[in-house]
Length: 200
Image (cartoon, rainbow, N blue to C red; front, side, top):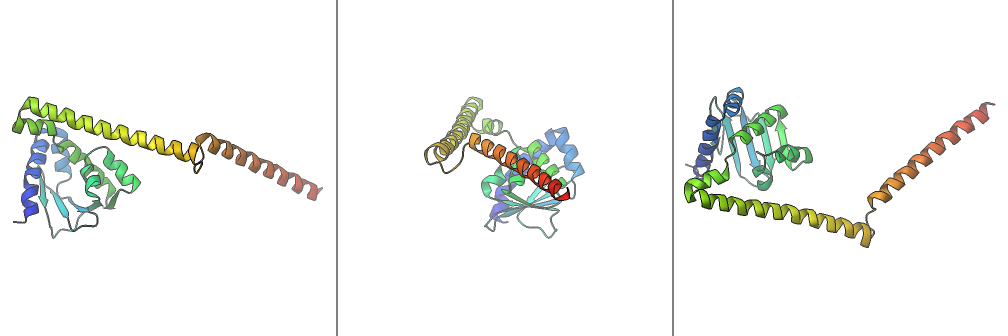
């Protein structure tokens, strides 16, 4: 058996356990039965096929079936696909989508239902207290990363707008837009006057 398929088997087991435990997930799985979704990691040969059955997902590294939906993106973007950010990633082009967009959306919803609670999964291995502590650390790192990104973005924006003057501030853009609109209106009035003078 392909080593990647061996690695995917426990993932499929966790997803299917969560599908069986959630009524909306079971109903959606039944609705999508027969759907084939191929997921490719951009600029690599890595790919996985999700074959949707009545009550479970089958993961494979190859399939003879033509996919109904093909999703490709970076490994990090693909990992976020099950969350809300998956929709945003498709909109902003981080994820490429080929095929039926409605099926892709429903498949993403199925993954969101089936997504494991990492803290709960860890508790079976290291115990409840340790799993909770690891979860707190992971959330703290995630919050720090998000805050650091926001702060860095604000600092870069401030530098470009205030220090180097390479980018106009919001106020300057608004003032410029107002002036352009006023100039456009003045030109339109002047054009109307000239037309009236020519006809008189």
